[in-house]
Image (cartoon, one colour):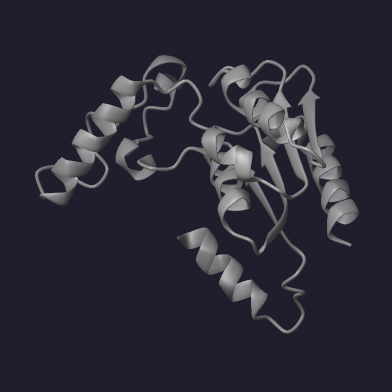
Length: 186
């Protein structure tokens, strides 16, 4: 909803061509902009950088998300669960973070990829440690790329992990993404 509102706002600005709106999202935001590219016709170009697309979530995770949504709607738990929302696995080192798995109910960027009809660039990290590239960015790229007349590219930044796009590979990623928008929004 926030992304739709942002698109609506900028589309009304006098110096914006509403026929040339592109989105860039990184990490979880990469999944969000992928979803938007599939569901909002105002989006004309998209870049998903080290994207979390929800790939690899199984039926049990979806079931738990719906159960949490029910508890939240009934006021039986807080909006972002303090204890159960703690990251685990490779993300456990980010103890300050909390997840609300219920917010993703009904949103699957991987499934939505089949509806994308705009130029799509997926940028992944070669040494991605937080998610499985094959089930996320690569999978979405393959779906979009397989469509007739699609414009899709997959770019792997060598030698970096997830957060490398914000540090040592920032200039490489930014240059690539700006060129993508320049080419497909002019």
